[in-house]
Length: 189
Image 1 (cartoon, rainbow, N blue to C red):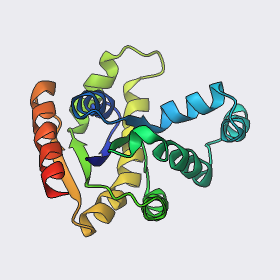
Image 2 (image 1 turned 45 degrees about the horizontal axis):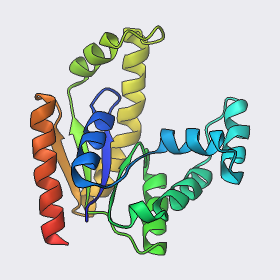
Image 3 (image 1 turned 120 degrees about the vertical axis):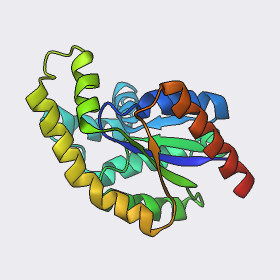
């Protein structure tokens, strides 16, 4: 039973690694972006609330995202473990998440940061070929990420549940290292 929180800058490979590890471990990969899109598409009450913010171009409030995550973590497939990808993004969300996990009697094993140098991230993101991904925009997004995430990394380090993985090695090697962590989490729990 592994419960992991994935952190990492845009382009670090969080989604790719989370999907591979979830398949290996037979646990759900829970992406907040996917949760929002599914809730909106399904027209659930929470999805309708989220859509009203998104339609106005606003960020979905933390409390609403927490409610969506609470709903997702309460589903039967998440009882044996999960990988959270894209949440939390800041310390306030991490505190909310800790409170939620206590409420639903879950505990996470590790918050794992995929560490990749900014210059490598810029090249990866430019390689995606998205029209709005100019180097200037990418570097601004990375700066915002670092500004918000540095305190988040400190938060998880203070709980002795933080691990940093070198994400600047071949993806297969990152996957192998993560598999080892999952096996350790299962043994330790």
